[in-house]
Image (cartoon, rainbow over the protein chains, first blue to last red):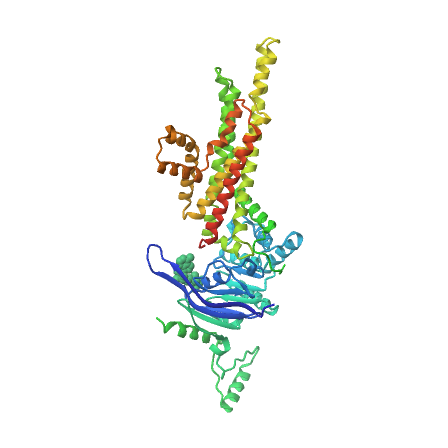
Length: 282
Length: 293
Ligand SMILES: Nc1ncnc2c1ncn2[C@@H]1O[C@H](COP(=O)(O)OP(=O)(O)OP(=O)(O)O)[C@@H](O)[C@H]1O
Ligand SMILES: [Mg+2]
């Protein structure tokens, strides 16, 4: 088994603009490596080339130059997709299939069949909370429900790599939370995840490393703690703390020369970092 | 499951999953209602032909039925295929499918095979309906004759009626009707991999269909008298190559009037059709495999 899940080397992608000579440079000179077992977050403003990069990694779009490989297999080969689950952005499936039928269909494409496939599909419908809608046609699904069936479909073939393009877009807060937990579970089982999301708080909670793209270029990359953590600060979460305890904690801190900085989670840090990185370009 | 795979090996299971799904899609889009039109046409003309007295009514019915079957199966194949790829691309369902270990070749083959299944079933249903209506009319005609004719004239008249109804010798002709529809569907698939709108696909496919039917006559007319310029000859040859001579598939008209279809001719036409299907499909694959999704 290769220790590298995704390897991208000098990737460029240009889309032709109809009736014009110029091209849209969706990805420019992108190189990155995601080791197996890592959760990697790809961030960036709209149109910065995140989805395009994912599609190239999955062999859906051909690069203009550069190479990508998945577990050591070139993305252009069909085998590179054997252990991969993909959730496209705004997933849209066959309207005339029910939720269960959709999973059975995609399961067959993954090489599953018979009762193991049925069991797995039922189990995943339960996991994404669609048991009740299993026998309804997808034409009647809401956006968040489509997102959930998309996630179930991505998990079907016991993938070793999950590529998720905005997995929580349109999902309600509880659902988003559940999806976050699901991704964390996958991480615990050693599954590599390439994720792209605009919800920085969520990215901060799940990802080991992030890369920030803008106009097709990778501007910054690294471990979240290194990029956005404040090493001289620590967060204390207390339950059932009495005012007296807080008072004395404050007093003790002041006595030792520390300061209590009121802060709701470190998520504002990543947000600030993100804006810093992407703003000074325009 | 994680074994590396030969890129050229095809998974029949995946192709079957795709074609089954395509078939299901077409069925759930209610394309079979289209066949109700055929039913109305056949039953309607069955009632109408009673009034013809100058010609054998069963013969008229048979001609109408076979002609309708030919047109309906062609149109069904054309309309079902034209939107198959564009819709998957537009809805981006194609992304989800091709993100699984499915090659574009398997995808295309699965789609086409799904249409073939639908066509096969449709032609079967139309043939059954057609044979049923003819059988009922046959009984009516024979009963009518039995009332009017004297016993010694009856056997000959009955035999004449029987000859004009549905007979097993029509089956090869119907098989060629199916093959023609399949050929036109494959052509439509090829056009849809090239085109960016399904209006273009449908129109072009119809034009090729028409050219395919008149090209035999045109060829004879243009090349008549041996005066054709070399340029014209090349053009005509090119046309004959690009567009199959669809008139060849209409042997069923001959069979309908009682001419027997030689086995050799049948296999020649079938081979000709099969070859065009193969070539069109491979061209479609060639275009599709390089196409930006
Ligand atoms: N098929 C295509 N044809 C032409 N241009 C394209 C195509 N796909 C993407 N682009 C262009 O490439 C650029 C990157 O698009 P991409 O979808 O990768 O952005 P993104 O980072 O995923 O944005 P978002 O956050 O909005 O999802 C955009 O400028 C887009 O217009
Ligand atoms: Mg995107």
